[in-house]
Length: 96
Image 1 (cartoon, rainbow, N blue to C red):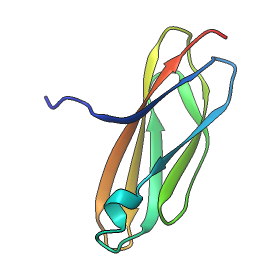
Image 2 (image 1 turned 45 degrees about the vertical axis):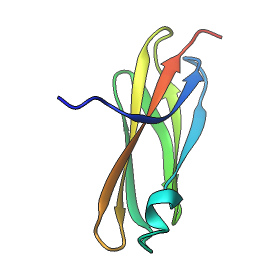
Image 3 (image 1 turned 120 degrees about the horizontal axis):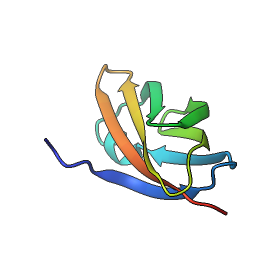
Image 4 (image 1 turned 45 degrees about the horizontal axis):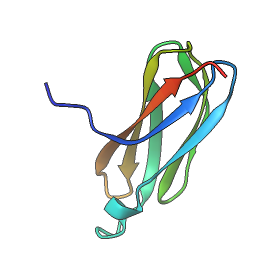
């Protein structure tokens, strides 16, 4: 099994709704491509309140979670040329 690589990490409290953004310009600009569709998934009891994307970034608003647990928010994009890429963010839920 391949080791999971994370592009970022963040912390949020169980009652907070916290947004985070993944920027894709470093991959997309050199190949002259843009985001056509995006899906963000999170594991466990944390949920996605809202998600959106632009030509070069994806943003997710996370809610819920249990203090002390670690979660993964996986951003998967499809580009206008049909390419697919995935980047993950580690989320630590902390009691605030």
